[in-house]
Amino acid sequence: MNNKITLALKGAAMGVAEVIPGVSGGTIAFITGIYETLIDSIKAIGPGLLTTFKEDGFAGVWEEVNGSFLVNLVIGMVVGIVVGVFGVTHILETYPVLLWAFFFGLIVASAIYIARQVNKWGLVQIACLIAGIAIAYYITIAAPSEGNTALWFVFLSGMIAISALILPGISGSFILLLMGMYTIIVPTLKEILSGNIDTASLIMIATFAIGCLVGLMTFSRVLSWTFKNYHNATMAALTGFMIGSLNKIWPWRKAVKGLDEEGNIVMIEPGIEVDKILQEINLSPSNFADQVGEPYLLFAVGLMILGFASVFVMERMSKN
Image 1 (cartoon, helix red, strand yellow):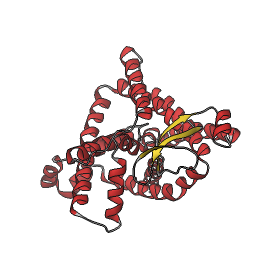
Image 2 (image 1 turned 45 degrees about the vertical axis):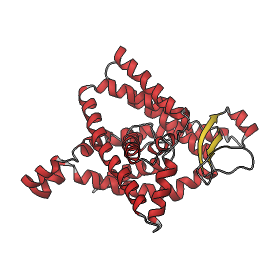
Image 3 (image 1 turned 90 degrees about the vertical axis):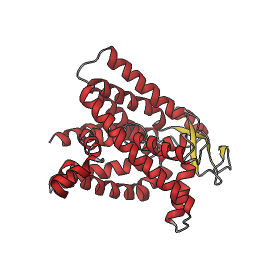
């Protein structure tokens, strides 16, 4: 029972993280010690399960996909997403600096934690670290592209977004924004959930879902293979992803570009409201106070320290 509760709590933490733009549930999975187990469980889901079902029935399938692990984790994630939507998003809207400060400290500690998993540092590992930093940093500053409703691109966006979802330091929703698909996929899904269903919308969402499924099964196999065959290089690259993503979660930021109600990209100026922020610039706490508002410097630093410490507390709990 304790193991089930622990898994559910880890899933809840992942769910909360997924609600925060720029923070990945993969990060939480990694620092709580379940990342590789999660990747292997996802990897097991595929056509081969049909053979397992024919030979060993449902019990064989359940064992192969680590069913108890996945079910408890998913239950926790659902609870975490609900809590995040109604709780964390309220904090994000009211005290964004404080929330980002906590996550900034958490990501810094996570990068240190992952770097410690590299058993040997050499030229290859350093190159992977630099590549990871460069890729993640570029993602945080890249300009959003125009969306495309062609089904092949919808399928591709599903594959890429779900792959980013399980990478520490990279947010799947932010990848959709960069691809210009956030304002296409999310409103279409909302329309379907609201009961406004038409054939074109159903085909689009079904195509996106298939892309997600294919991407999840494919990328989980790639990650599982790299972990087993190139453990140190993979860990170094993931450390780089974490470091590069810090640009996205710096607490003192000013929004400069966003999406209006019609989905158009607009520059953010006084009096202009946007539905989604696309681009922000980082400021020093003093410049933030001059241009945006109260920087809450002491509280923010305190929460950075708390976020930093929480990673190693979770690590200790995971070992126990």
